[in-house]
Length: 422
Image (tube, rainbow, N blue to C red; front, side, top):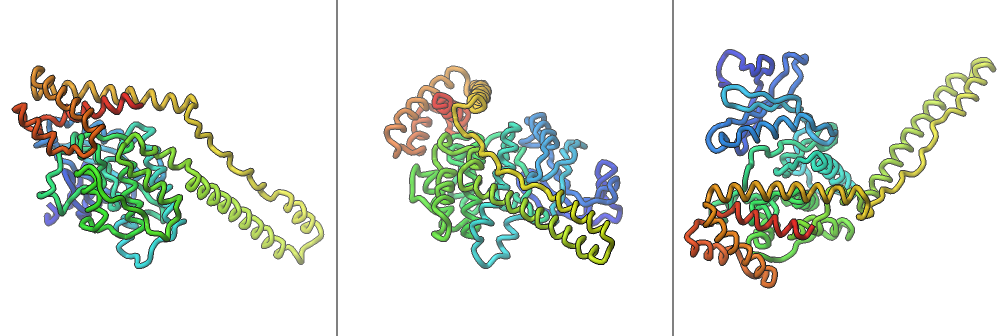
């Protein structure tokens, strides 16, 4: 395709320049938009065949929703279209690369203020998408793009309909460390599953340990797949407050992880934001004063009338804004209750969908057997955290079903337990 002497143009508008990368089900290209003065943009191409064919409507709907996102810390998605059983997504091009490339060039640890600033930008993007009822599902360093020293989150995973169980032996070198325990163990993705991924990103920013065969990932494998393991912490050069946030983001129980919004309202991050805002305001004030001083210097030799103008101009200095009002985070607010109600409704809809899929796959009679067995095992697991999934899967085999055919039921049981705790 690229070697053809004729230029490759998609949708009579996007001229192919070069291939940028390939991941999972999609390939990414750099293109020029001939209808926008040859502006550089990114084109993702997803073939809607094979395993994705059955879920084409859902995938196309997710892609269209990307275009509605409008936040300066999220890559801008311009349009989507389909041609010849392929989905095309046109997105903003971030010429400064991604966070993984940036960290690879660093030789010294990032200072805490810089880590916090970038963490705030990531959380701002995730908070916005969660309020837009969207999950990212694919938060990792290479999907955090840089443009004019601003982080832009991109490359949403819109093709993952379900997550397969992890085979440690076959996936050791490609372990998806950013996937939370409930995703790996229960095939369920929640808003706080993105928070787990942000915790992984925070660790990598603070340690530069972005080699997935490192000690960090080995600890995660032990913790996620073996029901417990050694806890890990940020280096001692970072504050206890930042480490506390990190620990909360990697809580095993997704219900104990704070939301992106709550993290942004934490004392550490909100103080940083307030200080940054005051600094920006002071810079604007300084620039305005410098401008006035410059005007004064240029008017020193002018008439007294112009001096009077200068005197008057001093009175129109921009006022220093009042301190930013602290945001109320009381959890019994009406907004909090409304959010919880919305979350419960969303989980109930997922439960209904999973129940239908499970019955279609197993049949009603076998579904009831598997459901009752897994529900009983979850109750046992609460009292015996050492009960692992290997033991549970042996019990499924005794029911004459393959464990991989039971992931819908497993997810259903997990969500019902979650709903009861909200």
